[in-house]
Length: 61
Image (cartoon, rainbow, N blue to C red; front, side):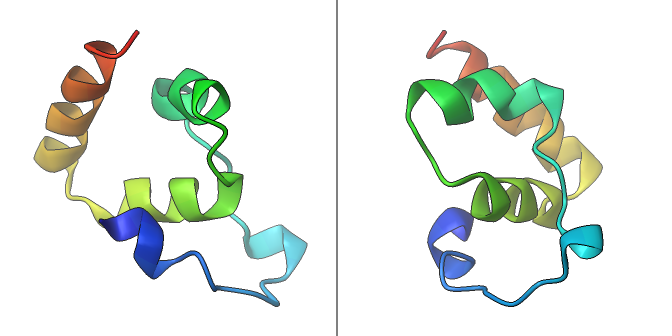
């Protein structure tokens, strides 16, 4: 759900663009998701929510 919110973000300076964290990098590559919206949506979650997301994404590996 968060991914869709950030799909239209443009004109972000290159220095401020977040990198895709290693925890979700393989998922992003496998499902050919856009990198910037994926990274932003990951960092929107709080720490515990991120851990739960990573555990859920491991199921898809």
